[in-house]
Image 1 (cartoon, rainbow, N blue to C red):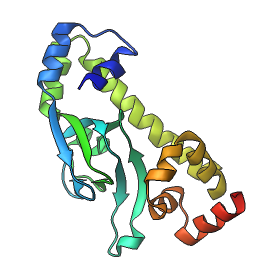
Image 2 (image 1 turned 90 degrees about the vertical axis):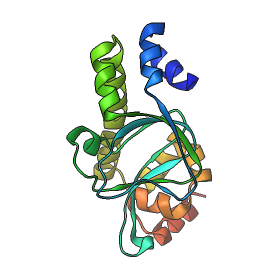
Image 3 (image 1 turned 120 degrees about the vertical axis):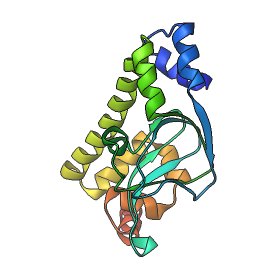
Length: 190
């Protein structure tokens, strides 16, 4: 839980009183490797901060090999099916633990209370939503502007641990190519 406070305090100081209320609303949730954090059709009830582990965002298909991976979250990052969280409507995608994931979560009603009763509440909401928006925007721009090879190189440069810790089939899906095409890209680069 200390990591969340450190993350927030890189931007703004948090009073002990505000931290007390906010942290009292946090719930530690743990998901074992390959378990679903959120299913398609469920409404997202949490914004979470990953303490350890890796999660992925995916659109499941009938054949597992055809699943579309469109995002990853790591330690010290916020995670949420944020569109579902905001609209209170069922999610059109799934969140899955790629490794054992431990996260600190705040529920929608509790976050509304933190917004109302603390000076930092809105800042916490803004920080998490800005981070989620920037990741989404950067990915969309990359898909529109970069070649598959460039997307792979960007990923390797920006998140080198991702390449080591995530199965290549998920990385291939994330950059928008087949595993065979990723294999050819990797061969050309090396």
